[in-house]
Length: 359
Image (cartoon, rainbow, N blue to C red):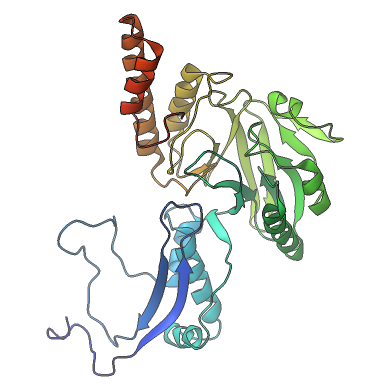
């Protein structure tokens, strides 16, 4: 490109403007360094490079255009990348983009950043004793800064989780926000936190399904959530509604929340590992039906209970549905052929991705 005259490298100056580390709920983590190189009056067009690519779009964007597209649910962004654009916008106050990059290069932003999975959907990564390979439970915070907030699945049970939730609640209060309620998606212990520890940090009514509420200690103020119930959250930009969807296959009483940014999907699917449908109280038929209902919604994003956000819900849910149905059919065939239980388990394990056999 330099030889063709598309870019100028006469005054080549490469600046480090920031670094980011992949969030800890991902199976593989990366430490990425981001650079700024001024190209002058570039005539390079944004086009796909030759060969295969993980990207689906190439385009020159200004930071404010990226944020606007993301906030209107027209664009998916990994949370660490979103924070870079927010840092750029902050540095651009009273400056042009080049000057903003120079400011960031002098003192590259580092340290903890907010994990925004979608507009009005933040995530706190709570360390929990969940099923491997997952190591964290996604505690979601719905609502805008300065408006009403809803905390979902604050699964804290140790000092590490306590500090993470406490820091976030202090930030929420510092924004002038009110926590209107706590919602638990289901009663499994990697989603329900220690209520005494939570109450030391903040107090709010607890909303959940009847099955989930019955598994909690006595709480003064509760609300039973049912299919179709609406949860309205007011903020500086207006009111955002979320609707309750019952998906009890993984756990009786499990609920999802459906909104314009996507679906808070609890333990229906994940990008990391697999989803267990326990034999003691799970229901495979109800589980598959719940997946089909979620797919029919054609959501923009799935905010799973564990692991990264899911930016391609229809494809992911279809894979889950087809895989579970195929396993179901194979097991039924083995049972009808009078195979022993141990043989069925060994055969079943060959149909799964590499996960522990007890899953």
